Length: 438
Image (cartoon, rainbow, N blue to C red; front, side, top):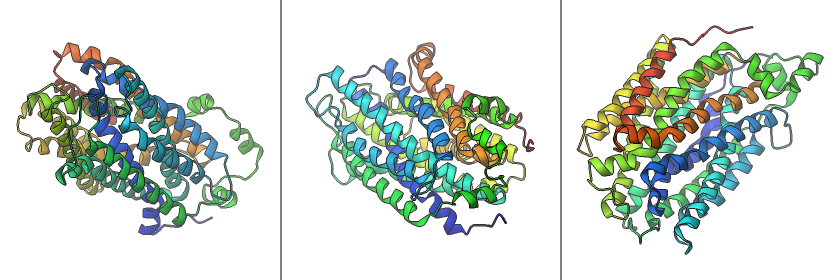
């Protein structure tokens, strides 16, 4: 079968639902520390609340990848998992921000919030993974970088919207403060609206994308249908697939380790860090702390803008690894600069630079990896590769409180740690093998 080119709009439709999923993910990323701090969590314990999201991703995404590799039904191959994940995410987004409004004790409210967070991240992961897989399934090698760049653009656009929701709702007059232990209405309404957009975007992709049937898929990926070799490969376990993984899988995984450690600390400590350095408060019930929480959304939106702009510049690098490494170095500079800036608007420069690193993290790893894989186990490998996103975050979350003590208890210094981690990731880029293995 000739590996046809897809039009821009066909690639756009493949990933459009990612826009809605990323709104949900952005709301989670920008507000989880704020929500649990408001509920009463100690700053030294905040990173522990970030263990659940990557842990669920590490469990869910390999399973979704493996199961969907073997799923063929009237709704498609990957789309059934997309629908289930989106529906659960919508339900959970209605409950999570209300954890402090149910009349529960502090301990019970945080327990309820943790359960909702676990379900939210499970469902987001289930909805997110099919988009990556459908690009791997349906786009030829020559267009994959472009297709993942479109996905990166939609991802960042969704982030931009999700990050800004609390700030916008506060601006139009919705309350940004609440009684102690209660989440402000500006955050609650952000989750409600985000849930509505999520389901609409997913339904759009479902209606406009038709997945290949088994015969077309086998022809597109040059697979021998129903051969003994392929039948045996279908039975291959995840451990065996890891043993057989191409070198690029592990080499890109090392870069991913340093990259995701950095961003886990950004999501965990930006709120407390800028509350300390810009608003000069550590009181989570104060108007200053909640204003810092809104400003975190603005800064993360600036990061998304920087990521969109840098994603346009990345194709200009003739050497992919040079572009990847430069991006991570710029992101590292952005993180470290936050410790020396005491004006909320000057922080825009820092987060524009951080966006450069984020743009490369969204596009480069998957483009490099999918070109190193055959189609027969694409979903399983992409699911396993998600562990290179999740495991670093779990390790970083477990060590967060210890490292915070080592840097004097100042949350802004955790962003300096993040910058150093991105520098190490840039060094690791040069170890990636770009030649495809047999």
